[in-house]
Image 1 (cartoon, rainbow, N blue to C red):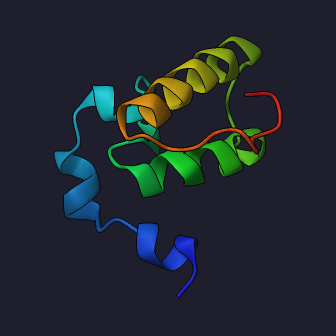
Image 2 (cartoon, one colour):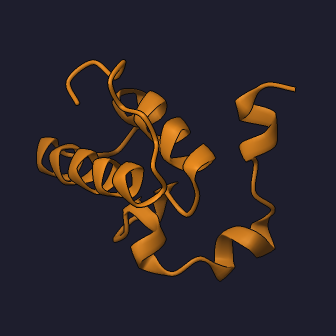
Length: 80
């Protein structure tokens, strides 16, 4: 099973997340509530529609903070 399948949230699980558990809290996009979601958020950031350049910069900062919080190795992440 790939990361996309494991990382899927139900509507109920997604609704239960706090704004702080998203890379883009104002739009509730890109959950970063665990290590798996942090990795997926990084991979999907550039392909996420409807984000301004400023939102993408802030999302990147929040994803990297999540990576530190969950001890995710970012050494292979381009632009990290």
